[in-house]
Amino acid sequence: MKRKFIYGAIISSVVFASCAKQQQQAQGPSGPPPFPVSAVSKQDVTSYTNYAASIEGEQNVEIRPKIDGFIEEIYVQEGDWVKAGQLLFKINADQLEQQSNAAKATITAAEANVEAAQLEVEKLKPLVEKNIVSQKQLATAESNLSAAKAALYQATANYNNSRENLGYAYLKSPVSGVLGSIPYKVGALVGRNEVQPLTTVADISSVRAYFSLNEKQLLAINRQFKSDKNKSLIDELPEVSLVLIDGSEYEYKGEIKTINGLINTRTGSTQLQATFPNPDFLLRSGSSGEIRFPVVHKSVFRIPQNATFELQNKKLIYVVGEDNKVKPTPVEVVTSVEKDFIVKSGLEEGDRIVIAGANKLKDGMQITPQGENVAGASSPSTASVASGK
Image (cartoon, rainbow, N blue to C red; front, side, top):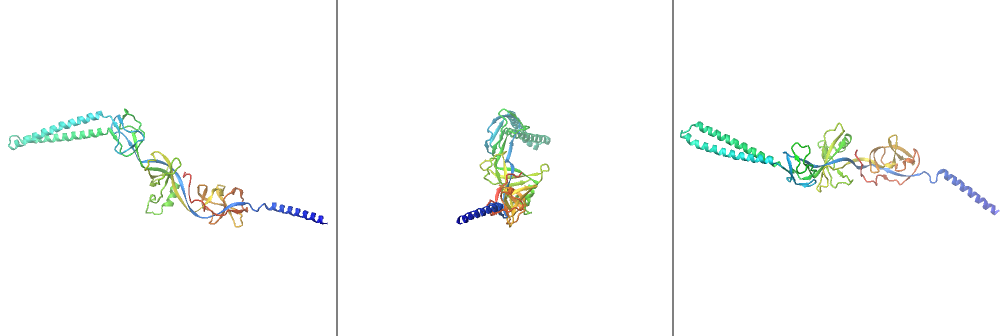
C-alpha cells in the first residue's frame, strides 16, 4: 500500500512538471523580449559642418620685368623666404646703360649752352644801358637763354628717365614672403609682354581660406546668426577652424572677413573668405583644407542612428508606451552627428524610445525595457559632421 502511494506521488509530480513546462513554453522563457530603452530630453547641440577650402597667402605678387632683356643674374632659389626690397633678378641692360650715358652727355652740353647764353645776356645788359647795342639784341639773347634752360630741363628729364629705366634691370621683392617657381634661367630673354611671370612672392604671414556655401546653407546661417539688423552678418559669425590635408586641426582659429554679396546663378553658391594667422609659416599658398563651421541646434533631441529605421523614405523610431508596447513614430532628422541623429520634431520631452534592435520590432509588440536613461545625456553636445556638401 505504501509503494502504491509513492508511485502515485511520483506520477503526479511528473504530470505536474510536464504541464508547467508546457505552460512556460506557451508563454515564453522569460516573458516579453528585452530591448534597451532610453528617455529623450531636449538639449542644445553644436555640430560642425565642413566645407572644402583653398588656401592663399595674404598677398601673391607676380614679379614681372618692365624692360626687355636677357636675365643676367638670379640671386634666389625657388621656395626661399625673401624680405621686402631684396634683390631677386638682374636683367642685362647694356642698351639702357648707353642711353643713360648719352643722356648724361646731353646734360653736360645743355649746361654749357646755358652758361654761354647767360654770359651773353650779362654782357649785353650794360651795353644796352649805354645805348651801344639795341634792346632787340638783348631780347634775342634772353630768348636764347630761355631756350637753353628749356633744353637743359628736357635733357635732365631724359637722363632721370633713363636712370629709372636702368633701375628696372634690378628686380626686387615688393613684399616679404616665400618664392614660387622660377621658370626662367640665366640667359633667357624676357620682356614686358611675357605671359608667365619671373616668379611669385607669397606673403604668408597670414593666409586666406576661400570656401563656398550654397543658397540654402547661406540662408540657414543668416537665420541663425543675423540677430541685429544694425550689424553686418560678418560681425556676428563665430570663429571657424581649419582642418588640414592630413586630417589634423590647425591650432589657430580663423575669422570670416568677407562674404560675396551675390549668389552665382550658374553654381547657386556664394564665396566666403576666412583669415588665419600663420606665424610659423606652416600653411602655404595653394594648399587645401576644410573649414569647420559651427552650427548650433537649439532644443533638439539627440538619438542613436541605430534607433531608427526607414519606411517610404521616412525616418521612424519606436516609442514605448506605458504598457511597454512599441509604436513606430516618424521623426524629422536635421543632420547627423558622429553615430547619432539630431531630431527636430516627432518626439516629446520624456518619450521612451528603443535605442537598438528596431529591425526586430513590430507595431504593438510588447517588450521588457532595459537600461532606461535620458537619451543623449551621456553623449557629448558637440560633434562634427563629415561634410557640408
